[in-house]
Length: 211
Image 1 (cartoon, rainbow, N blue to C red):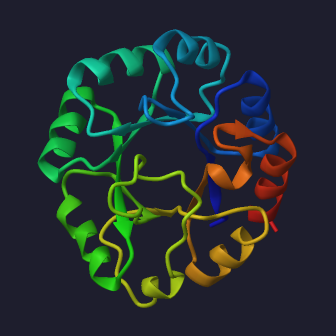
Image 2: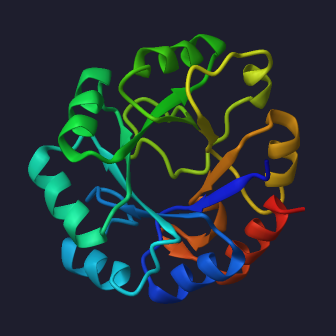
């Protein structure tokens, strides 16, 4: 199966267009105010309104409450919820309440961190392996950090999975070849400044995933 790609933290029609033209299967809309990629509900609605349903819209959240989820789902016409720092029981409750696919982010620095993925069996539909951010960091991801891909060697994934953390147009082909990732996720790796996506980098990243 070919590797698919999610371009995350998109904030303009132009960069969303670049992602779609380049063949991105998923686009990520961030709903987390501390992030430079955060969208308010009105802006998210404007971005999502013209999008075809063939492109999966993923809302990105950090342990959200129900009110946040309800407004974001409606505004972004979301298909999928990507949940960071959200306990398995809460993920299961969100999945049951919304009926949407839920991805759970697992922050990785050591091999032992991968074992957290097993706690999401029966709750999440996909695990997103991301690099663990430093203690006290304002964001749980999107900081351009990468974990050691060798940690995935021989690991039996309990659920469908995706690879994130420090990917960019230069290293994504190697990442796919090294890990066999079925889906790759990028945000800061296709930016020219925090929260400012670069259309050429988006195109290059997506071309590299298809090489």
